[in-house]
Length: 420
Ligand code: AMP
Ligand code: GLY
Image (tube, rainbow, N blue to C red; front, side, top):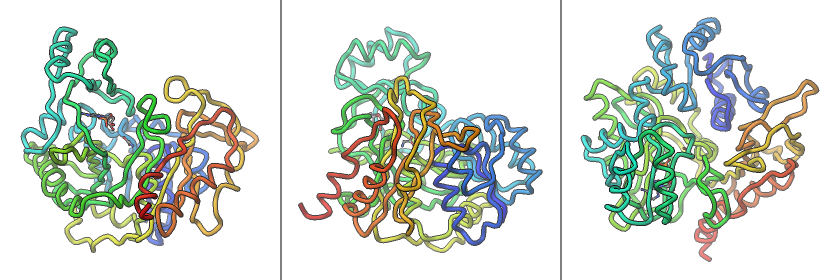
């Protein structure tokens, strides 16, 4: 099978790593890719937001499957011309990707499907925003309606800051504050059948102890030893399946990866947000535990045959990933610095591996930082403590001037799992 992956972040590197280990994959391509992806796939300099360019490349390569990774090309509709040309594509249409592209659309779908989520108002003027903030009280949750790479959400008890964020966006969703731990649950769907993956937890704040600004995600782990039994079945029944059914009913069939960001509140499970693609960095840990070869699963979603797929097989152990970010991330990341220690960070037996996010190679083949989240180091092991130790041992080998990472990824969960 010839597979083309669209995108160039750590999520696409994780996808390419898993696909490169699948014996069914005979050729692996990625566009545009990055310095790390170039080690496992042939990379192509293509504008990932340009559907015509992506279609032309897919046809030239005679790709049997195209996997569209990030939200920006999905929301821009890059999957649509591929599907129209009869190419199996993993990733929703532009219409279905509105589930991530517009928080107001997602709220509307959830209301129609009876999916539990935070109460919310859509506001377009400062007066509306002020009224909504006062209706819910502190802490305030203000979300830019459009795509913002995980940085459009402000959660604060400072009313002035909440109002200022609302004023900086055209349209905002203001909603009730959800307490309780967060869970990311991904599901693969062909628009009818929904196959959940293993839950993971992301660390959204920049600093240890969940301090600092929201980011795209600073680390993740799986499994979640503290998660209630039956969580996946409950979310499948009350969140994932009804959402997929509602989108099909509207004529906007969703095929690809449905990501439910959940809060396990004192009043039950609530959806914080949907995404229309694999999460980053959760994908690093979820795919690290998936034993079923990936290409067949993605192809079954693309061609509508998920119902016939064997149950997924999972590693019983654990995976922990730690993001290494550039100085200044998320506000103003610095770039262009050399990264050293990449090879030393990895374990020869595959229990520790580095995935590139914002990197590029210079003319001499040196790897330079080229983005906010630069790379992630994933460790696997028998339990979270071992996976965590391995991931951090890898991080300790990375040399990047001014870089930052959290030191407490999966710490609490590892202690809990060890019975401490
Ligand atoms: P989102 O982009 O919607 O996932 O929001 C980013 C992060 O903001 C989430 O992962 C939560 O940590 C936080 N957040 C979003 N909505 C809420 C809410 N209603 N209550 C509490 N925290 C929230
Ligand atoms: N880890 C959060 C996201 O992918 O949106």
